[in-house]
Length: 214
Image (tube, rainbow, N blue to C red; front, side, top):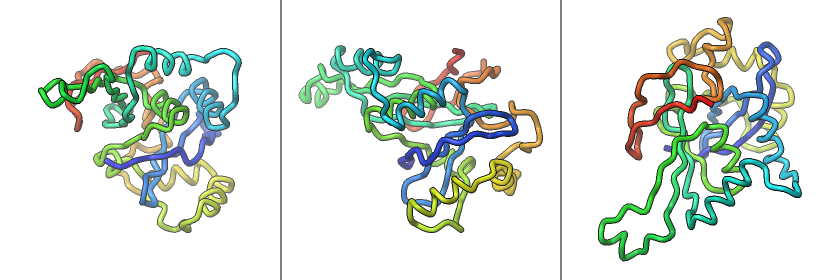
């Protein structure tokens, strides 16, 4: 798996849906994830580091993590099923000592989470966000024509027509449904209403993941 960072937050004007573009570290690949409007608003606040007098929901989550003697180790977007991305938060129990770890006690806790929440929390904490190699291979888009600088990417985003970006996705029909179809066929964060009752497959860190129905 490889580390990812938020490169841009844009709007698909056709479906009026926000899209977060994740850049894959040390590559010229972009992973687009369509997210909800509420999630996009909160993500924009996290990107801009807008201060608030009282804790917002994700701030409350971080306060709980701290008070429970836990530490966020990483976030992992690990699989996709029925066009829904699945992710998890990996926490470290700080109460478990190094001696207990050496004795075989597992100090890590894995929590199923929406990719959008993982991205927001990563922006707020600086904890690394990773994407599995499988998702990079099947869902990420290669933008080899871009230069290496941040300015090159900024110009690309500013001039980007999302319909043209979708054409890039459609150049590999084995990986994507036609974007002329309904929005439900677009790979998205699992904040959307999808039927995902089947058990999710295990990923690198083990365990089964069920979709978040909120």
